[in-house]
Image (tube, rainbow, N blue to C red; front, side):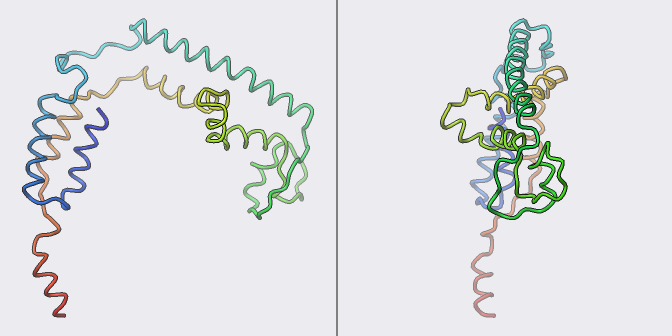
Amino acid sequence: MSRSLLRGVNLRTNAHQLSPASFHARRTAMVQAFKDGAYLADPEGRGKPRPNPMTDPAMMEGMMGMMKGNVAMMVPQSLIMGWINAFFSGFVIMKLPFPLTPQFKSMLQSGVGTRDLDVRWVSSLSWYFLTLFGLQPVYNFILGSNNAASQVQQQMAQANMGAGMMGPEADPDKLFLSEAENLEVVEHHCILDGIEERLLASLGA
């Protein structure tokens, strides 16, 4: 649905780059498809009330599985963080080879109470967080997309998605109809209109 809707937005945004015949043909076809519900997953369900996700057993089972996965990943990560904080609290393990502003001190020197320490020094706890969340592409390449670090980083997105399930969802049919109205009121002006006169005028000047 989002890709089909994005096509309408792109057509409105880049309409000036198309010839009048091409734009009108595209607009007519797209507006008709939007009004007919051609891009809807269930065209027969237009106008019917949307089911409540909380009453769908499959949806509830998926949400419970998501919560179990989050808890299963939070426990080992919390244990590792506690172990590092207990045995290596206050340790600095490396010095960055480039200068940084003092604003990075709180991020790079977590657990270190020395105020005069150079901001380029990195504490053990800060390095753990940097490697866990900052090297995500490397983890995905070496360990695969289902590694622990990847799942931990997805927890916030999963929580937001779960919160979105609780609230009302946007009606795709209304979105398509609204975009169809936006396309119908577009005043088309091609950037190639009068290009010959403008070119001759610029050369003559």
